[in-house]
Every structure is written in structure tokens, then in C-alpha cells.
Length: 146
Image 1: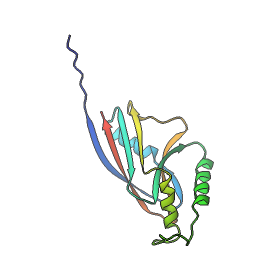
Image 2: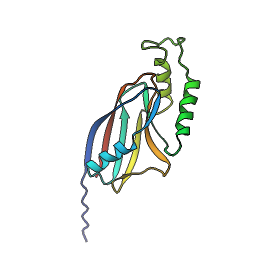
Image 3: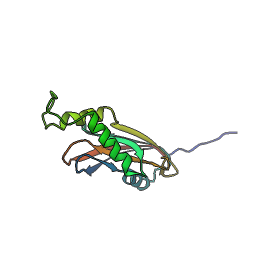
Image 4: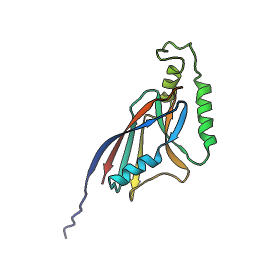
């Protein structure tokens, strides 16, 4: 008996941009889910890569804004704005932003099953802006699967 499996391979790369307002953590889950639906992406992996060194990505709680505020406060206390850093080309928030990115993520991979991001009930995908002033942040979204 011969079994034939059909697999429709998909390899799509898109770039999405978000305008930030400075020192904020933005829920981008809906935008990423929209891309999954737009491309009729059934199952596989979505890899997200932020194209900056002073902003990052994270999967975090989506129910209480207090969690996001506490994360911002914690990281700001850990890496305060200061003029004591050697690297301060863009101001006193420049090096602290790099350090916050260093201990968070610049890449995330999320599974997709049945056209839906696989996230826990209380999880969301977030863009973390670590600079004091707003920026336009770009994320490369790579869909691999079918």
C-alpha cells in the first residue's frame, strides 16, 4: 500500500511597522494574527525579528496592564537613564535601551495551528519600546509551514 501525503509548503516574509510613543509595551498580537489569516497560514511557525537594538519583543500577560507597568518600572530601575554610560550618542536613554533589549528578546517564534497563534489564555505578543521618545519600529514576520 502506498500512502501519499500532500504538503503545501509556505515561506512568506513580511515587514510590519509600528509607531511607538516612547517607554511603552504595545500588544501586537492582533496584527500578527491578521497576517496569519491574510496568508491562509494553516500550521507552522511564525518567527518575529525586531530590526532594532533599542526595542524588543516578548510574550507576556495580556490581562493586567499592571504587569506591563511593573516590567517597565523594574527594567527602568535596573537600567536607569544616566549620563554615566560611555555610549550616550543619542542621549541618556540610549544605552539603557540597549541593555533592556539585551536581557529581553529580539526574536520570538510562535506556533500556529488551525490558522491561529498558539498562545496561552493570558498571553500576548508585545513590542517593547525602551527609548524615551517615539520611534517607528519594524518587525520582520516570517511564516514557515503550510
